[in-house]
Image 1 (cartoon, rainbow, N blue to C red):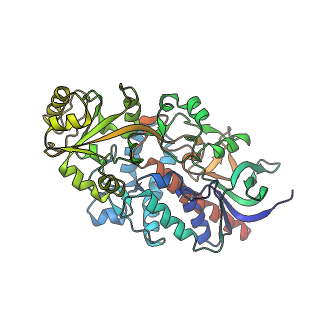
Image 2: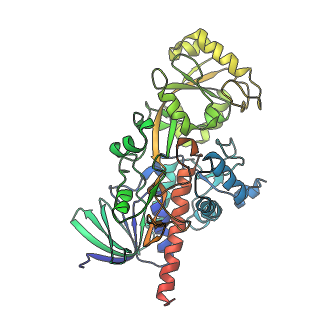
Image 3: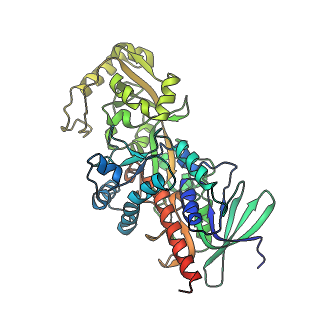
Length: 460
């Protein structure tokens, strides 16, 4: 076979998972080629809040937070109804702490623990993020690191077409459509980091019809190419019905409204001024509940205290600058500004504000952090599909498996391209699972590929 180029490690996809895998391999001296479908390094990571759940980090210890791998595994498994592979969950939980510290120490991406609130499902403060709490900043800093390495080549507008295998079924290269035409690239290790299929309407309708009518808030380039290419060479898939939804996209600004508005004591109403579920259970599964409402959108209600606490989050700060919310000194005035029935809304508000923390209300919500006090805020929010959580089956080393659960030689999958740790449906998504699976398995795949290549060079 005639090859257009040869490298040690091929990485397909330039999101957070792909960059972490590529930098890991490049740091070890491997020749790495990263193929990005578009002309930008963004991916779903750029649209996220840049928050990575991690346990047993020194950042947590400095704050007196006692968190272990076992606790984190328990939280993830409980949230996904114990539907994810335990060894896979264990692998990302174990790598999470070292990953965050590597980002901070080796890549000089300043990481810190978010302590303003806990996201649904997390029993400890374990979300780590850059200062701006911005995925866009995280991607910018990852790209800056990637560009330091002369042995890491980034090729834009290069779309995966197929994976090339040898007679034994091992992956040995890829066919990629570039600006110079169709090319065949040989690689000793191939890491698929193409995310999922959220941008492929046909696949969304086939596998997750319940969210198909919601807007897609992920990266448009996520069309399932890696999953389809893997299936073509015999890779197994699982949990294709799993996804991360989000119930709080502000369409006017195109920004994601942090669920901290809820977890710090706010609530969600429909256009009739009524609550309709347990908001605190999770923003992913709440998205489909919003779709069932009369106008398929609603409002998050919170107060001045919560507003001030959230100004450290870049997306929320931008919404504040654009005054994307409505503000009023009374609930009646707020009702008028968002055009909902004032009587219904007032009754909803008084009922919510009378609840006691730790005691279940009619929707089984038990978290009522504080009484809301004037002035009050309302921000219009809509449900969205953020990214899919099922894909190619992998083992704890991120190696792709076939239908017989055997490893397909030299092939890895990370992030949305692989089966994640969110079980089989939206209810299984716990905040941060997407970045954890992308960057955690990106780091695992990069390290595993490097180890095997080093062993090969030593004749082991």
